[in-house]
Amino acid sequence: MSLVNDLNAENRRDGLALVQEFVKAAADAGNMAELRGLIDDASGELGFDYYALVNHIRFGHPSAGHVRLSNYPLEWLAVIRERDQQLDPVLRAAERVSSGFTWDRLETVVRLTPQDRAMLQQARHYGIGDGFTVPNHIPGEAFGSCHFAVRNGAEFPNASISGAQALGNFAFEAARRLLAKGLVRSEEYVVPAPLSERQRECLLFVARGKSDSVIAQLLDIRPKTVNEHIEAAKRRYCVASRSQLLVRALFRSEICFAEVID
Image (cartoon, rainbow, N blue to C red):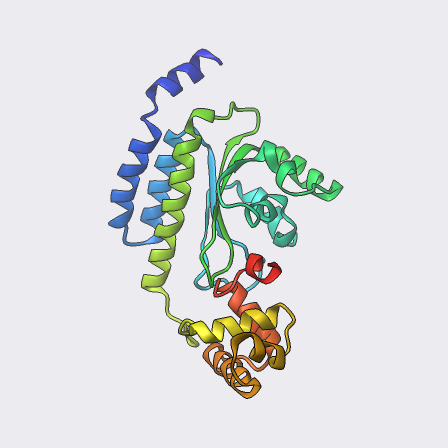
């Protein structure tokens, strides 16, 4: 480590204490510009040059109500917009884990294709070096994540990982709060009421491939009653088919993949 890096490390405040200060200040932030300034300061003190808070939606698609906040180089953002964001290996990895990970561990989470490796190398060309990603998964919402990176060639601040994990969680939630507070939509999406326990049981058996008659035997009710529970669940989600209902229920964590497999 160089003398300059030594001095920078000594001058950085304790990561968790810094995040506590950030949380207090972010609660009073009235707009995204204020929040951006707070994230700039906090991530910089943790030793990172870049950050990005994003929901995993494609560039060019309507993004009202979705988080997208970063200080990445504009040239790199332009390159990303030319790609399908769903192919980004860092985002794919963030959708498969629940805690933060350094980018040098990517291949332990997802299989990297030649295209992935080329994209990571291209990021370095535009100045993005090593990084750390914090997944942010909210049931019923698009996947989200917060990313911190150093400039290419700079030393990665390993001592700041705990602070970055906490900052990523709180910063993303602060951005969601501001969006919810100021968002105006012409067609507001109404969050459905949770399924009843019986509706959930019937849907879970449907997901396991059981027919209404088999479900009726398992739950000691009539097949007609099974169908009524499923139809009621479809009305709650405003969907027309059982397939759509299953997708929505999985997305909102009414049922989970582990239950279906079991």
